[in-house]
Length: 377
Image (cartoon, rainbow, N blue to C red; front, side, top):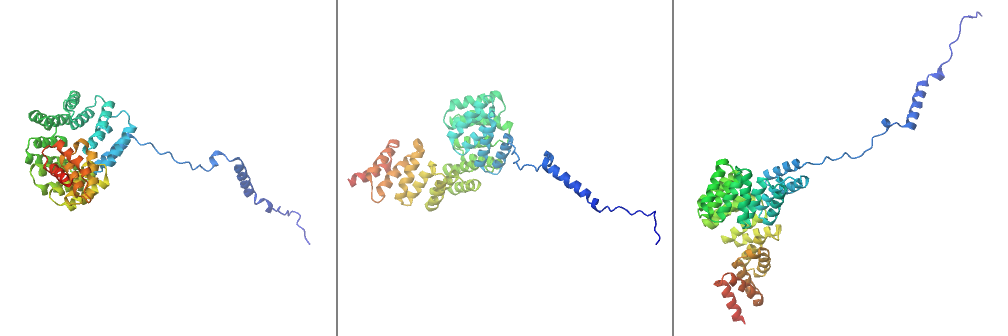
């Protein structure tokens, strides 16, 4: 056999074909043991929530106002006031909203705090002047409104507030002069139109008042208080009770609250729809058991339906809440309810009837009630 001496067999390389895999495995083991920071799985810590600014709460409040959600707007302004402890603006807005909601103590406190933050802020001074007027503090109100005008001679709200103050004290001409100045600066001021209507009302010009309130409503259709004030012109001034109730219904549609429900319920009571009045007033009391006007009006409507048992607690609670604002008819109606309920209770009736006589010595119902009790003795 011929042997080729030049042939050299190739070395077998099978055992080295896996060396890249072994190398990668070694690197992986090394990296796992060392675990550099870039290889670690990121921790799942929560992302910090950015702190909201006062401006964001102000924008939120304005959106709520545009939708007629006054309570939510107040909450947003309150948060803004906390975040901006030197800014009087949110407290000024809160004072104005509380006054619209007829919460005079809260309005006064917010206005005072606003002026404390910004003694030279004309908006805050005008807000304080208006709530002082509502509190009957006319001299202080005039001084603060004039302070606002000294800082800003063209401050429309300050001029409108001065008109309201002088309307309250009975100086019609000065009131109209201030309104004319306010209109010259801004024909679309809601407060100026409202106070023009109020001046007409104070002068007994109810048709003109209705028209001026309508103008204010056209500028601020979600201001439920304007509908209530317009309804008052129809009810008290013009004795047009159905039109008054139409205004009150519109107020409820815009903003259902104890104030608007009470206005509608009392309007229904005045036209003799006592059953529907009771239903509406009970809704008002359910929303806020501490709203005095709704409690006394509910008591009066219950008395008209001869439901004397329920009349007593409603009127007692309402009179307690109203305090000095309770009227003579509330007292003698409560006294008569005690007389007519089963069993009669003249011992409870007489103090209320005598309280009515303190307010109106010639009150016929009170005198009649005392006469009934005298006969029963």
